[in-house]
Length: 610
Image 1 (cartoon, rainbow, N blue to C red):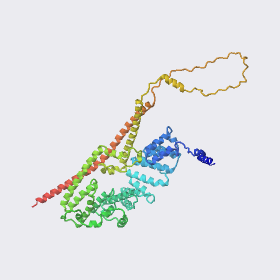
Image 2: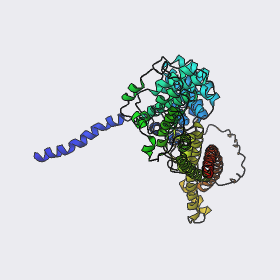
Image 3: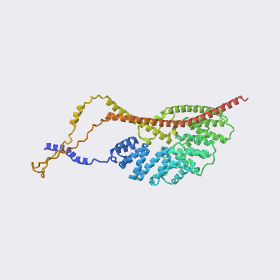
Image 4: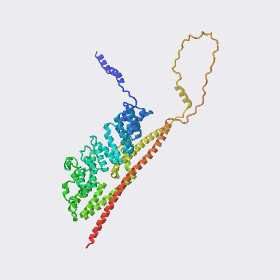
């Protein structure tokens, strides 16, 4: 009894599994190729989210095969269009989006797609195409996307120099809660450039006093304060510029320019403090920024009250007979400039500070100290010129661009690729501003994509070469025609193999022997036969690989030529940027050497006097 029970228990799992088999078979999910349930479409969606657009495109085109993508399911078209756009293939993406707007009219998805198309055109410098796309979708755009439309259209207008139109467009959205601080900054710039400085300054001041939540917010706030401060300096309102420039962070991409401006603000015409439009209490605002070190905290009043020459270890000297207020202003100007001299001497703001310190010391009558600072400035500028020459050589050798793209050259992110950090190269520092421009970024993306495609095609060329090598290096016995024919006959199946013929009883036929008329003989027509022409070429694996190898070599030639042209474009842009900086360094050097000659001449004349 116990043995029988144990046997039943052993059979129980088998019976349960057999019972579940029909349920499992019925639970298998079927899908239409190209639909959202297609595993390959899901894989492409995963690749798309990881910005591997090239791999996603290859996967999707394999799914489509010979089928026209416009005849595939809507889910497939959306995925294909998004990856075409992500890889930067704008025209193919637009064709799919137009078809989707007709067969799958989702206003929000279509609107977002066309906004991305316009963004790509704008970043590539095709402002007319971006404007046309934006105007075409304006009437059908959902309300949730209006703010993005206004932001992009205003940037297109500003890029074309239409500041009044951009300001008018942004002002219509100013009271809208959807307008962000970046749009407020653009509004301020548009107003100032359209001849409306006062409301533009107010917008920049609002952005310069915002509470930042991210690193981008901090950078935007610093940029707004720097722009506004220098705008006041140019308008001869230094008294208003000083507190604005003091709001810039001590360490940041705009801190050096702000320190330079703080020094010049002490020596520029003070004007009248703009209380009407910049009415907030600066002191209260600075107290609220407890977690951020600002220039206003670094250049504090107590620090200014001390003798700047004692702080820097300079020897005392005889001041000239200038107005005491002018002398005090010059001493205050030295404070931020001396802070600048502790920073990277490759920055043009730091180089200008060295000259400004020497000039101010000379004006104060500290001729010996001025001479020392001019000599130090010459040394700094000579070093900068040497590094600039090294940067030019590096660019001409193509090292910088190759270093930038080498780290992620195999990623197929296309247009979505972003330059996250800079290589450690001599020219990197001099080209920071250029590297941030759309013009350079788009050219760099094109070069990187060409390098990636070249490596991909080279990989396939090596694979094809391996196939050809294996074919040629493998020993084969010569073909035997008789053996091949016997094997073909042996393997061939009769035309009517398996056919069963049944006989039926024919009751309407005459009795045997009663029909004595000779049956007519009709000869079946013999089809004309002709010898088949032998094939012009055998199309086996080796021959197909050889044809593909020819196509691959042609592609490589095109990619190499395009990559060479794109590299030359990047080199020309970089050298043009460095040329302007080289001329600036040369001007600084000439100014410093003339000042040195003047000081030496003055000292010599003083020694010759009885």
